Length: 67
Image 1 (tube, rainbow, N blue to C red):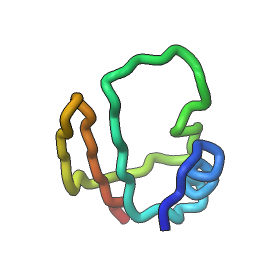
Image 2 (image 1 turned 45 degrees about the vertical axis):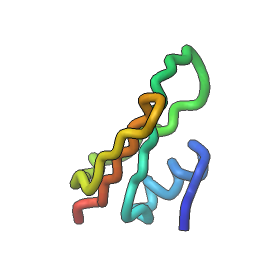
Image 3 (image 1 turned 135 degrees about the vertical axis):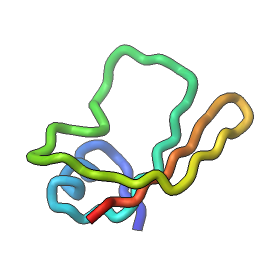
């Protein structure tokens, strides 16, 4: 199941329900908005699974949760 949106994703993170994170970074800077990673009670340890670069400079990184 995919979860999108900062509020729902943050609640799933705090509940420990996320097994994998896929983060697409676009080469654009913005100055405001809702932070995707809200404050957590503890660290989330991750293992890098994949990194891919797409045309236009978009970079996809996939991480799995280390338990």
